[in-house]
Image (tube, rainbow, N blue to C red; front, side):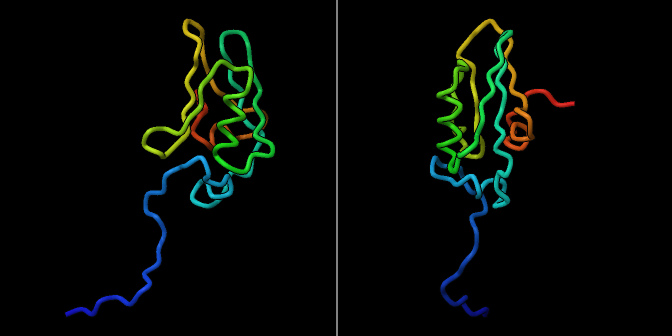
Length: 114
């Protein structure tokens, strides 16, 4: 027989989920989101630059997106694994790109890739 392990057993969550209080520094497997330049939302012919400067939690990121002039709704996806952004405008082209850095790609929000 194999003896039972001694307590405490420590480890990391094998499938961590995002919450509003998840720290930006804990994103990307603990590597952190170092580029806070933000994203650019384009709806029709209008572009909205959204900076993530000063954001420390996922909630801060969501607030910055949702309080921007862009007609979008940002939230944590139901599976808790990513952020999602939906346009509140219908009938116009909608895309998400960089705002001078690589934040949109890093967060998996960039809609057009080379």
